Length: 277
Image (cartoon, rainbow, N blue to C red; front, side, top):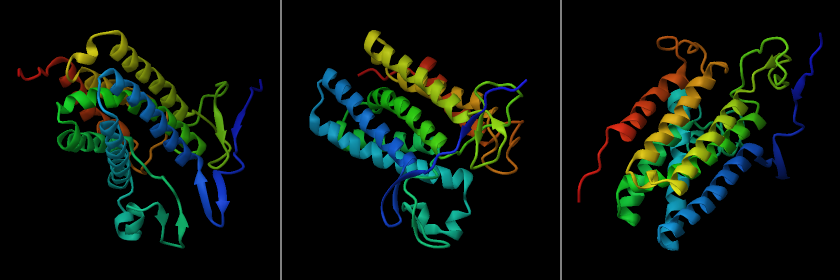
């Protein structure tokens, strides 16, 4: 029996503006994530009676923290050879080794982005907001969850983080022509679909319940749900680093890195008690 075969073979990976300068679709997805996230936080800050000045500063801190964290996370966790082979490309959106090329926002890790977000929000709170760090973390995770959806769609555009070969007859299996002619699980779309529900749950809890006022709960729930989705979906994706398919106790790199975040999430949901003032 012949089944419908979905083939992913984009004519281009971005929009060419002039010369060798191209805006990759992946970069556009990051831009969409930050822009939509800004408007979500604008609504939240208005509800919390926070100033426009603090919102503008939040945007700057979040962009820098998430992007730097995501980039360093990718290089440290998945591509350490860049430190010696093309050091400047670690920090700049250009490739220098083997010829100069503008690459944009490529090679970014969600675990590093989470760490970068926490660090940048700690600094932002100390310098600008001057409230509890968990106050801002409980709220910033809502647009972060929506942003994660766009990032995984960007990975799909790039034909990266692809899935393992699918069982014969899987109707939504996709052939990534940049990779091979084998129908595979669209792991990026599985994750994006999961993150939609993470966003909707956090958004609903903040606006419809009192959980938004339980310090640390939404932050912990974000870490738990986001990384649980990652752990589950990783079983359908090929290893991002050769030799780490069964890195520790049968878990690959993405799954191992997710476990500490899940434990931190559980702590803030069920163990943490805010300090009395």
